[in-house]
Length: 436
Image (cartoon, rainbow, N blue to C red; front, side, top):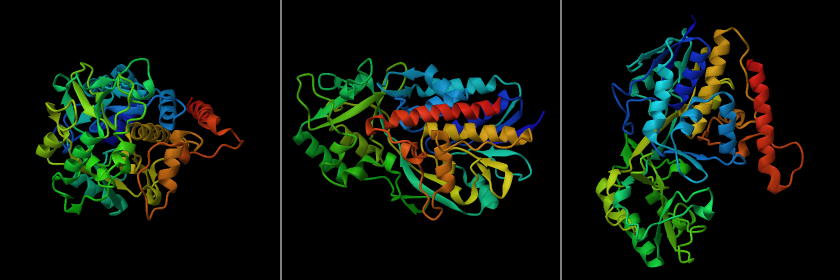
């Protein structure tokens, strides 16, 4: 039985392992979290969601919605786990974190050809087929081992996590249930409305609140990923910035038909409907300051916080300089990279890269030609972006129609997204046929 090592049992590593196990390969899955967790890990199981509990939009005309459909074509473990652990969130695919992670773990453990190794990898044998999917919080020892393979060609940005409160501590005399523009079959989001006076007081306290140490690992925490920018940093860009961002009130009228000045949304975080996270409230404030400032939000005056927001440093490699479109090192085809460490940003994007790495690792082990996913698909567009971007100023990228190849025919603007989707799903089927 042919054998491969996979380092990291997050979303990308789990997807790669699942594909290879189904193909009959022996997989040695290295995961350090049960020995040494990083600052944001809480569970011992695989595929843990450490930031938001949503895999974003389910609308197929959106690039991320199309990406989920593409992944499902390859029997994606992450998509199956998400559907099995789904909780209400309007047009978003939100999950119960523990159920989601448990589903992935149970699925992988069911294979007799899987060996789980609970240890930190500090050396990588360049002669052994290996997929490195360690995520953006790779341990120092493994970072050094990777640097020996690729050189010290790393980038980084700072990411932040939003706080979670108990449902029982929310004041439902103020908070109301409604999805933006009433999207979805049920009203799944909780909404805490603010008058202009209440918002002004909240904003003033937020921008003047004390942050946690702004230096992480000796680096300045001033390189933020725009999609997860701390709410206090966003607020400092202008007094009304939040009302055009996470506190945008449009589409969220009060029961009396009026529109508040600002609205804080809360999204269900577990299947038991006990916990809710503050949408868009990633933060690096000190925990005491989070309690003080966020309790100024109407309806959260007595909120019980079960998790406070934290910030962490995310590392990623210079993929345009060192990776091929098959996710192999240009210098050594035995070594694959997948997940956020490659510069894809987001849960589904990371998982999708794991599928691609798994497919091409299997083909290499079977002495077959690797497959380059066409950049008319979202999966292919992501990999094309991270391997063709400017290597001197490479930044992480989420799925978006802007990274796929332009449509050849002229299409009305209102129909363009659906045409992108139709083409992507048609072309992904062509890729599937090559695997059979």
